[in-house]
Amino acid sequence: MATKSIVEIEIKDEAFKKFKEAFDEYNKALGKQPDAWRVTGKNITSVNKDLNQTKKLSKDIESAFDGVERITRSIAKNLLDATSALIKVAGIGGLAGGLAGAGSLWGISNIAGSASNTRFNSMGLGVSAGAYNAANVNYRSIFSNPAGTLGAIRGAQTNPEMQRMFSYADINPNGKTSEELAGPLSLAAQKMAKNTPDINLGQMSQATGYGEIFSLEDLTRFKQMTEEELKTTFQKTEQDKRNLAMQDATLKSWQNLDKQFSRSGTQIEKVFVEGLANLVPNIGKLSDSFAVAVEKIMKADQIPGMVDKLSSGIGKLADYLTNDADKDFRALMDTIDVVGG
Image: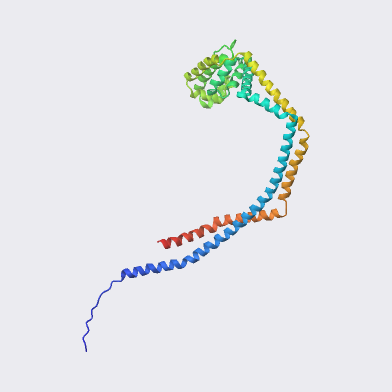
């Protein structure tokens, strides 16, 4: 019998075993994927179906209103064409356009209106046009209402009961304009405000009479400003009063022009009102008819069902996104994570 040589070789298979375990886990994860994708796909398909139904219902409703819109647009165009023809025949368009063009040339109508207001307000306050313009430019940084403040000072001058305020401020109001008194009164009110706690400012302003001239906001603003800042504002106002002065005769001419523009505009409006009077009843009737048409459409037998289906589709989508979507997305991400890991 022949002798056999037997050689024993030790094989280390730990690495192979680890690989096999990992491969088995991989196969197991792959086996789960179809179920996970199937569940997710089923939910997405259901939602997509509802969305398609919602989209169709929206198009149906949109088509119905498009029909109404086309009819209304056609009617409106016919009315516009008829009105344009009427205006051309009557010659109203050329008249109105010419006057409008003249009034708006270089902003003339705005200039006339501004000049008219300047003359009107300055006369009422008893100050010159220059003083009024200067106050509007400079006082807006210290008074909530510059013209109103000047008016209140003017009112105090003519009210015997308000003389105590001038006495308290040690000011003689006789022979002075409201613009000339604004500076000294403001400085006196500022001194009072700075020496008065905030909690007592309202009460003290009424006791001294300053509250009849200046608002609580004005007095609070005075407390935060320096005396020099107030003085500088009134000095600048005095300079601007000369620089912004206007002759009363010039302002009066602009005021007359402003009235003429207003008169012409009112006359044009009168022509249109009277000339188009016969259109009013039928335009009103058209408006009512359109409202009735929309009401009939919304009350049609098909509308409630369409709205209900649209509402149902929206509700299903909202429910899915709120509840089921999160679960499906997590399952999908877990599967992806296992495969990737």
